[in-house]
Structures are given as structure tokens and as C-alpha cells.
Image (cartoon, rainbow, N blue to C red; front, side, top):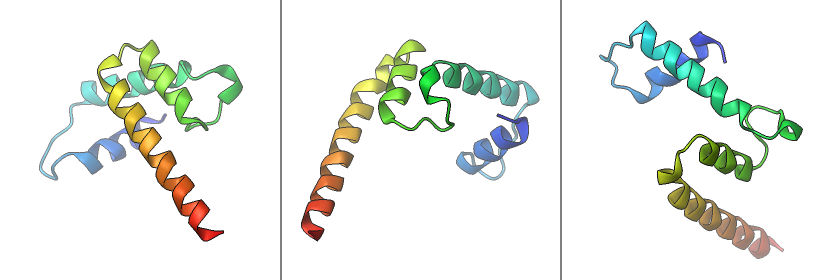
Length: 89
């Protein structure tokens, strides 16, 4: 991911007066590259096509603290989508 894209994303989530060090931008860029490399080769599209690919990549990177909540959110989201699609028929 180009450094300009990383900077743009970081600026969207930080306060407007925040300054971002070049080292921080480069560290995030490296982390994004590492994260994407853990997505299975059959799913080379960015972003990954299946949420399970993201969850597996997070587990591979040791982000276990976030997996339970992310999985719960994913299941809730899917249940809501199924309900919406079922109610339209």
C-alpha cells in the first residue's frame, strides 16, 4: 500500500491537529504489508473477499485479543443480512 494511502487513512481516524511522524507512517505501511501477506494466496484481492481471511490473518499476526469480538460482530452482521434478505421475499 502506498505511503500516501496509509497517511490518508491515518488522518481520517486521528484528530485534525495530530502530527504523524514519518517513522509511524512507515511502520503502519510495513504492518499492512505483513497483514496482507497472511491472506491465503487464493485470495489475492485487496481487500480480502472473505471476512474469514481477515480473521485468519489477524490470528497469524497474534491479534487474538480482537478475534472474539470480531467474530461475534461478523455473526451478528450475517444474521441481520439474512433477516433483511429473507424479509424482502
